[in-house]
Structures are given as C-alpha cells and as structure tokens.
Length: 386
Image (cartoon, rainbow, N blue to C red; front, side, top):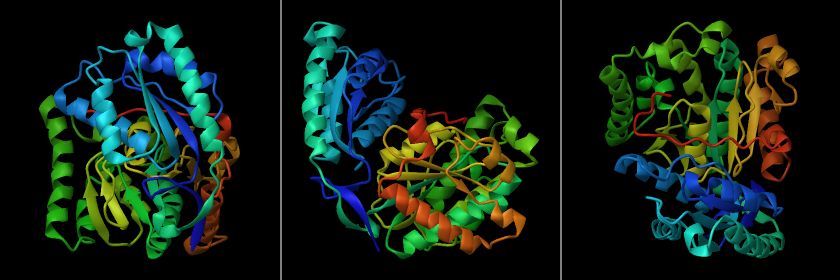
C-alpha cells in the first residue's frame, strides 16, 4: 500500500510541507512568531526552554527541537537564537545536521542588531525557502515509510472500550504493511507493564521498559506523592475511571496486539519498523511533541471527554468513542468511534473506517486542529510528573 508524500533529501517522506521557524530558547520565541506571521507556509512554536536548564533537561530540549527540524513534514528550518542562550546556535545547528541534510539557515539576534533587523533578514530567507518548498510535489511512497504516533487524553471508559481498541487495530494494520506505530505515555502503562513485556522477545527491551516505569514511580517517591494523584486527572475520575490500573489497561489497548520491537527514549527516532514504545510524560502536548521529534508524521489522539490539542509540525487526528463528546465538540473531533459503544459496528469495522481517515489525512486532508490553527507545544523535563 502507498501514500503520497514529499520525498526529502535524507530519503524520508513527509505528509506536510512546512518551513520551520525554530526558536533556540524562550528569548527567541517572540521573534520567531513575528517572522512566521509574515510568511505563508511557515510554522513556529513558543519554546519555553533552551536556557538555565540542568544538563539532562538541556539534552532533552536539544533532542526535541533538533528532532522537530528533522521531522519529514518539515521542508527546511530557519533557526534563531538570542546569542547568549545556553542552547547556542552552533550546538543547535550541529544537532540538526546530525539528523538531516535538509535546508537550514541560522540567525543570531544579538549579531543581527536586534529583533527588527533579525525579522527583516529572516523573512527574506523564509520567503525564499517557502517558495522552494512550494515547488515540491507529492510522490508515491510505501506505507512502510509512515510513522504513526498514538496518544490519549481526557480519557473516560469509552476510551478503553472503543476508541483505543479501534486505534490498536489500525496500528496492527499499519505494522502489517511495514509501517511504524509509537505507543507512548509511561505513566499510563503503570499496572500494565507485564502485558506489554509479554509482547517483547528481547529481554533487554523488557528491562528497558521496566526501568522507565520504575524511574517514573521513583520521582513520586522522592517528593512523597502517591502515584494515583498524578495519573488520574479530575476529568478521568468524573468521566468514570477509578484506578490507575484501570486507566493503564485502557491506554495500552492503543498498541493493538503487535510485537513490541523497540523501546525509545523521549524524542528518539525509531530504528526498527513495527510497534515501538517511547518514554513520554502523560501530559498530552509534551507526549505528542516527543513522538513528533522522533519522526512521527501523523498523530492519532483518542479522547473520551474531548481535547483541542494540535501540533504545528504533524497533523493530529482526534477520535472519540463517546457519542456525546462527538456531538458537543464537533469542531474539535475528526472521527466518531461510538458505533462500537452503540453496538452498531464491530471494532474491526470501525477500524477500517479510521484507517481510511488516516490515509486521507496523510494524503493532505486537514484535521480539525489544523483548521482551527491549534499548535500546542510542550517538552518533557527530567522530572516528568505529568
């Protein structure tokens, strides 16, 4: 099976064709916003990190923003720093260049002579890059080139009964075609680790999975907080979920029944095809960002209560198994999986429809979050309490 994608110089295929205006730190974020507002075809985000971070947190930030630039949906990047950022433009340029050979320009605000002069120079560069990007045409690509990120947020009982199993079936189908699916959210596998471990042939992978879960638990022990206070949100409880384990058992259904081939650090690019697990926080925007930095061209996000979260780099497809949520939040939703709850169709039948929706978005159909312009970005930190 094939999709229509934009072939990049590094051999990967994007499903969107955007120029990234990349702030190295918080001090460059507003300048990047001003640049992006003036050039059609560009995207940016508010980077709240990049300075005054611990070495490990700084590495997470570097891996994330460099991963954004390397994502196949990005044609090229214009990186902007203040000049005295801990995440310097030279460090950022090197990290991006290690990951991809796509077009890259860099600017330093202090060297350019301030924000106004930086914006003037960057707008010229961005327009040239966006014009070059507009010349790119979609070409046939094998489905094995697709990386799907899977997320859940605002979960309720319909998530574990309908939306997540439907997504799990789609994941299995994609894996069957040689593609890659990323299961995420370490905090939301707690209590179900053994189920995922049973689907790993490599004992080293099993240990890596348990190590990530134990690290998550350890953070709560350090500050004296019970785990359930984090993993069950107020919305989860109001929606009908009662325990961490109940939520986890629903969450891991997004992974279907495929063998887990790899366990990844946050923002790490998969090396193997198939189902993989990425260590991410349960905080939706940060979890999605990690998968996008790892190369996911598209995200499917299941929600029982409803969520508006989007991403500037990868389209986010919203699916709910709750018929009331689909009706109340139609402008935020892309797919209604409630036929499973109603007994009108089986999980496999609804999954066939979701697979068609996925391929439509991959081929260019805009998601609700794209139409609304929702571009939430957050990044993981060393202490991932959320």
